[in-house]
Image (cartoon, rainbow, N blue to C red):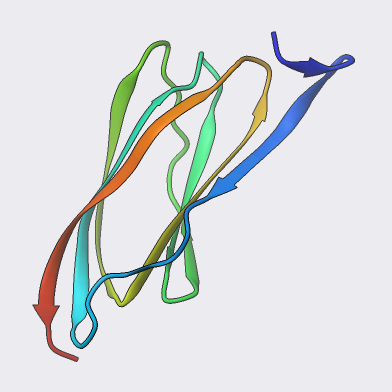
Length: 104
C-alpha cells in the first residue's frame, strides 16, 4: 500500500514536449501507454501544441499496454499521467503512432 498516513499520494508525471516534425504538421494517430498501475486509476492528458485533451482514465492489474485513438494534428506532443496512488505504479513507456507530412 502506498499511503501518506491514511491519505492517498497525489501523483503526476509529464513527458517533455517532443517536436514531431520540423516543418510540417504531424498527425498523432494513436497513443500507447505501457504500465502496471496495480489497480490504481491514472488519467492521461494529451498535450498537443499547448492544448490539453484529457483522455479516459485507465487501470491495470499487471504490466499491460493501453491504447487510445487520437486523430489530432500538431507540431509538439507531450503526455501527462495523473492519479491518486494507493498502490505502487510502474510506467514502462509512452509512445505514439505519428504520421508526418500533413502540410499546414
